[in-house]
Length: 166
Image 1 (tube, rainbow, N blue to C red):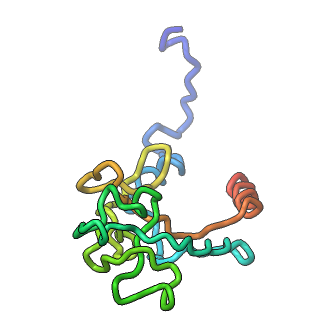
Image 2: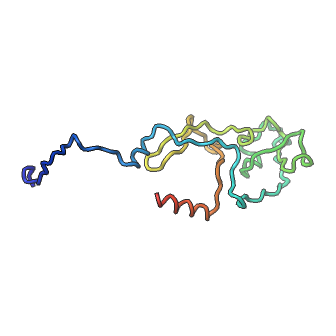
Image 3: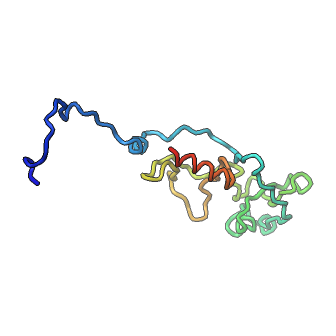
């Protein structure tokens, strides 16, 4: 209908007297900073949820034997998506996970040397906070290692039920 046909309540309350409040979820979405967090260097497992460590395979890349100065794309470990460990000075007696003889010259040690891509937190509308790379990454390059709380399926379901209550 027309504006004059609308039933208008001419009570003393005017539009200027009404309080305006943003919806809570919208307020959360426009926060300027990510929520507080604690830096971790190793995964945190729920009690009784830690997986057993894989046994050493005994495979050692042949990069040094082939005369390579660095482990690259044709390194056995890199092709198997395994990080190189060890050097000339270490051997299987000292470290059963030893799988490379190049040591500090190896190019397949990004996790062990903590060399992930540079990232920064970013809010993604409707998704929450995440990380984006600052300088981009090349195909096959390590972005980040997941280091955080590792929970089992039961704990996942419990938390989802709790969050649904909110």
